[in-house]
Image 1: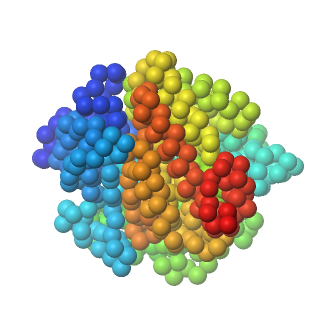
Image 2 (image 1 turned 90 degrees about the vertical axis):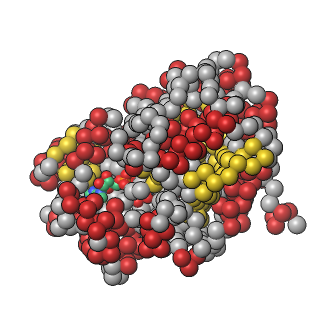
Image 3 (image 1 turned 90 degrees about the horizontal axis):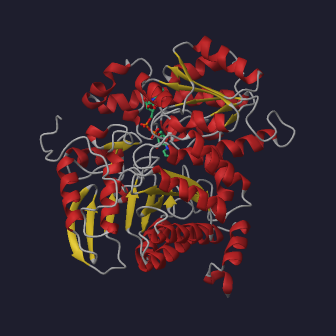
Amino acid sequence: TTHNAASGPRPVRAPRGTAISAKGWQQEAALRMLHNNLDPEVAEHPDDLVVYGGTGRAARDWHSFDRISASLRDLEADETLLVQSGRPVGIMRTHEWAPRVLIANSNLVGDWANWEEFRRLEALGLTMYGQMTAGSWIYIGTQGILQGTYETFGAVARKLGGSDGPGNGTLAGTITLTAGLGGMGGAQPLAVTMNDGVAIVVECDSSRIDRRIEHRYLDARTDSIDEALRLAVEARDARRPLSIGLLGNAAEVVPELLRRGAPIDIVTDQTSAHDPLACLPVGVPFEEWRDYAAAKPEEFTERARASMAVHVEAMVGFMDAGAEVFDYGNSIRGEAQTAGFARAFDFPGFVPAYIRPLFCEGKGPFRWAALSGDPKDIARTDQAICELFPDNEHLIRWIRMAGERVAYQGLPARICWLGQGERAAAGLRFNELVASGEISAPIAIGRDHLDTGSVASPYRETEAMKDGSDAIADWPLLNALVNTSSGASWVSIHHGGGVGMGRSIHAGQVTVADGTDLAAMKLERVLTNDPAMGVIRHVDAGYPEAQEVARRHGVRVPMSEG
Ligand code: NAD
């Protein structure tokens, strides 16, 4: 390939099977998951080490990647590797309960926490953008966001329909308009059709449309607004699920659809708005995007923001016309406001609108990957989930549909949203299955940073908290510390994921079920304490639902005890 510092073979892919090259499975797991993040099946732009979300990287550069890999292979079971924004900076003697890897990505001191300063430092080779699961090595491809998106659109359906609305609690009979078919946004069409709805998804990169069709996340493609509308209305009237990728610039297409009075019921967006350089302005040809953004970042940013203002104005127009409109966590309202559009925050973010009630139960994006590479191992874990939670129809429906509809990218993996108590039960069961040999190799159990107690992000996960504590970032730091103290295999603290520089602080954890008694003890603690951080965070903010969950699960909150 073109990378001169690269020494190892490219492209990279996680080793499979039961033979390991590291000194233990905890280290091997980190090695495999790092490689897996950069597998061309998984990463959006693997040659640039970009996993997803604009420029979210797994390692600083290929040399750093090679040094991390070598360090993990060499690492003892009582040592800890330190990674500073994608670069291995130290190996320290700790102890066997300590994480094997501690990661800090993209963190900047408050007054310096903006894109301009970040890019200056990045250009000097001093930092990288870690997004959420890119720099913490637990991205599992588009399935990871599919479950969250499925949950969100399910909640939208319930809100729109109730039991007597258009779809009786599904999206049947509705049309959703959105944009962006990247690593995250690519889940939207399948999430809508799994809820029986019709989706038009605008995307300016033709290759992204083809990729989603290839992965069976998207049904059809067109370059014509007329055809997209015709197909959508036909399918809606037949109450037939259908997703359509429409090639175009969202900031042109969305206002045009509004102008035509298109019969759109739900509007959102998942272009990379959090990073103006990753959002194509109106009037810039797709082919000139990268060169232009690199040559004139300030001018490009200004044009991108102006486009987003036009786009958001049209979204507000749809809201005024009666559509259900929400910001899907990409900061597009903030960018539009910066560009001078006063009504940008007239529609809500998806978390207060749909997700917070789940967070109060400690629910969030629990996920796991089969380090063997064998899909049979995931099939066995799917079965285990259904056995553990036989009464949860919603969960079982998801597991069944995911098994049928989701094509694996990289190592076979699964995600489902589990709450307080459920995560620990699942983790311990997986560990037993590894111990008994029913699963052929260890399972890496982690989660997105978009979780109940692991993120402070006032435009997204912590938008409009009941007590106004949106920007308090102590919680994700305590989350990382408690996971480190509880026995996680690797723990990370990031800044700027999802919504961009200056706008979020968040933490990740991965804990490996290797079938040992030690792993069982660690899993029990981590998978109890990690979601419990979310429960106490929401108790502290005054949510009665969270107080009830804390009582039920014996989550101790000193301020409620005295
Ligand atoms: P990505 O960079 O992989 O994909 C963005 C896509 O938008 C690209 O395919 C790009 O071609 C397309 N695009 C850019 N400008 C466009 C325009 N003007 N018109 C049409 N298409 C355009 O990013 P991603 O990983 O898919 O994430 C999308 C956004 O969602 C990011 O801002 C991310 O931070 C945010 N996000 C949301 C959640 C959530 O839970 N809601 C989670 C993670 C990330």
